[in-house]
Amino acid sequence: MAQPLKNFLIITNATKDPGFLFTKRVADCLQDMGCKATCVQPDADETKTPEKTDCVITLGGDGTLIRAAGDKRVKGLPILGINIGTLGYLTDADRTTAFDVLGRAASGEYEIEHRMMIDGEVRRNGKVRCHNSALNDIVLNRREDMRVMDFDIYINGDFLTGYTADGAIISTATGSTAYSLSCGGPFIEPSAKVMMVTPICAHSLTGRSIIVDENTKIGIRLRDRDNRIRTDRGVWFDGQYCADVQTGDEIIVRQSSQETLLVRTTRCGFVQRLREKL
Image (tube, rainbow, N blue to C red; front, side):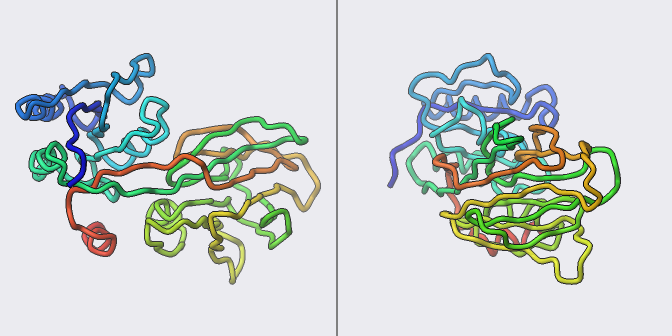
C-alpha cells in the first residue's frame, strides 16, 4: 500500500468539460471521501499550487496531461489522468471508471510510474534562443513554405547522417505513440529511458528512426543545399511553439533531470492499452 492521497489539484480542460459539470462531480466525490480538491484551468498561470498538494488530477485527454507535466505548478507532483477527451494513452481512467480510481488513489491502492522527459534548446551563433522540457517530443517542422529542408544529425557531437525531409521528431519512449508513430516510428515500451529521432516524410528510401540511450546528446544542425538563409521553419515542445529557426541554427536535446510521475491504479499494461487505443 502506498501513502493515501488526500489533497488534490484538479486541472480541467474547459473544452472537454463545458460548464465544468464533470469536474464538479469529481471534486464532490473527493470531498465525500474526506479529501481536499482545488480546481483550476490549464491556462490559469496566476493560480499557485496549494501547499501540501499530494496529487494533480487532469481532466481532458493526453494533451491536457502533457501540458500539465510541463507546468511549473505540477513539477515533482504525481499526476492522475482521467480521460474525457479522445485517445487517452497516458491517462489511468475515463468517465466510467473515474470514481473507482479516485477511491483507490485516496486509499493508497496505486503505484507511481516514472516517465523520462527531455530538455531541448535552440541555438543561433552559439547563443541559446529558447529552451524548454518535453514529455512527448520536440519537433522541427515547416511553418509556411512547403519546400523540404536539409539538416544533419549529430550524436554526442559526431556527425551521423543527413536528411532532406519535412522535419524531424525527437521523442521519448512516451512520445513513441504520438507524432512519431504517425511518421512510421516504432512503438517503445514507455518506461524505457531512450530517445528517438524520426524524420518527417524523408526524401529517401532508407529514412528510418534512430534510437539512442538516455545518456546521449542529440544535435540537429540546419543547412541548405543552395546556401540560402531560410527562416520558414520552427521548433515545438510538446506541441507548444518555441521559436523560429533558420539555416545554421542548432537544436540540442538531452535527457531532463525532471521526470513525469503518473499515478497508476489499474493493472492495464502498455500492450493492452496500445491494443485498445489503436
